[in-house]
Image (cartoon, rainbow, N blue to C red):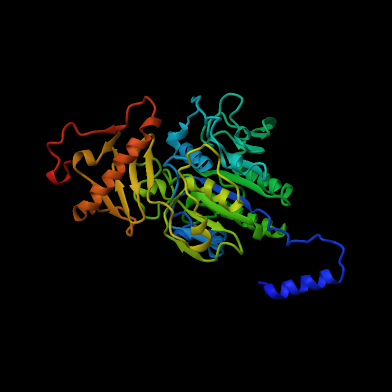
Length: 459
């Protein structure tokens, strides 16, 4: 409601003339900073849920979430496997900058450097923060848990639930509070129960929660009540239905606490599907080259009263955008002295704006293997047999018009000018990120010579 300025001054003058003694004015109470919940699934495919076009597995709660919010159809995980993807989401940086470019396995000693600033760091001290579920950014030493990276609470497992030994841990501000054996069928339910407790405890103040579910990553362990519930999806589909039910419980809890309109919930995945799950017709799968089936994942954001309902956007975005977006929505600065690769996409989410990105870089470990602009995709490398093979080095430039997301036929021969422009972008990206690469040789299998490369593609 807007006030008439002249009328306001008249009222104020009359009040003063009446001899009001107090000079104190009472401004309207400022709107509280919003809560943020990021539900991060493990290995969920683009086509596994209804809002992204999936039809094999019923996901009524996610369908509702999409009806009440926005779906990004061209959202990319920060990497095609989990460790670098999670690092990218939490830091807003391409994982090669953080040394987290590959999956950490049971015998690895590496971890996210303590010098890295996470979303939880950026939101301090205004926000209570928790990471509940899967960590997978280091699991050795005395500082592997998320509370050494800005979070007040960590409750969860150190890595994927197919790696052993496995236990559930709870840490609060660096102090271990408990350790429990894992009951695999109830694991996701335990994660949700602890998340709900955190929400209840912090309902009256701003909070940030990453609920990092460890499914539908294989092997699947459907909870009681969900086994054989998916007629077409098998055990994998059962776990997706369980995840959907958790989303429904979460939305109901936020409403019951009266904080539904104060809370933005994001639902996404760390990368594409592994040996099961649907890419929704996208090419390749988890860990596979630069094609979209490995990187493009579900993304739904819901915030009643702030994000318009039933919106879909093809604006390109990536996991590295979460950090700057949450900072912007909270009215807080990004970490000082840190190069953040992500962009604030709050305009995309709340106003249907265009992407702030000129391009997104796709990495295979430390190598840039693909570049996506709003319309075009250039793929430099893919896997052949056991090799990561350079395609451009063999005269097979792969350019795709992403208005057709299937990436089945390169249109390089039709658009040589676009190919050259994308190759220039690629060379610049390689130069920009070369200083961050380790001592390991590139995984790209190069052509021995250029004699067989058609002249049109030779520099």
